[in-house]
Length: 205
Image (cartoon, rainbow, N blue to C red):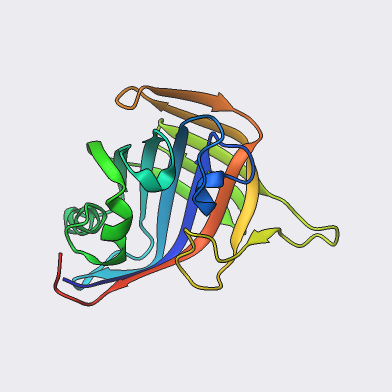
């Protein structure tokens, strides 16, 4: 059971800026309602090529992010073949072990897994995320006085050592999910984009 997944991750949520979850603190408003996505710029799972595909989550986090008990709905890119979708789901269920298993151990319940259109068009914190009719966000990074994008390094959720996270805000963020009992329509709250590299070559699960 092996995989190597590299690309860009994105989190948009109901926390203020900067989202405390990224540094392991409690959310700003008791709980955190979030849309997350991982876009695979390169990737193979047991020999199955998943380059160019995206997986997204609608997430309800009831308290501190590290305490777990997340409730999520999983969305797999509709452009994936059945083989690709099964491989991605296996990794993000934790069945293939490795660093992704460590991440998804925070999930207490997956309400469903759906194949949907996903738009992930984000670079250095600027762009658009759309997951079917469930989540939509327009993103803009913060910038320095000289116009450089504001970044955060070495946070608890950094998955590439030294890779920066692009700190920004969502000028618009909607998240509507009946299974999660979430209905969000806000402006000017947290968004963070970063790079990821998940690699596992063992046979543990």
